Amino acid sequence: MEKVEVTLIARGNQASEPWIWKLCKNFNVSVNIIKANVEPTYGSMLVEFEGPVEEIQRATAWLLTTGIHVEAKQRSVGVQEV
Image (cartoon, rainbow, N blue to C red; front, side, top):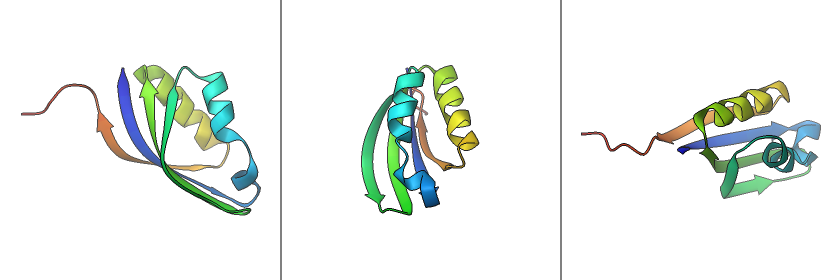
């Protein structure tokens, strides 16, 4: 299982949409919300996605099609670097 930490930013109407719910429903990805600030017209979240790498890539691509800004912060593949 892959873990990827990302920042998600939504503006305007996107901030009030249930995109985390849709993401969890439509993709085989667990979402851990680390930090969030959501207002009626702006929202930002630091989240960790966990799941198969292909599903995380599909979920991220889907988020981008919704207009949400996705910025990778950290990636852990379960192998320690030397």
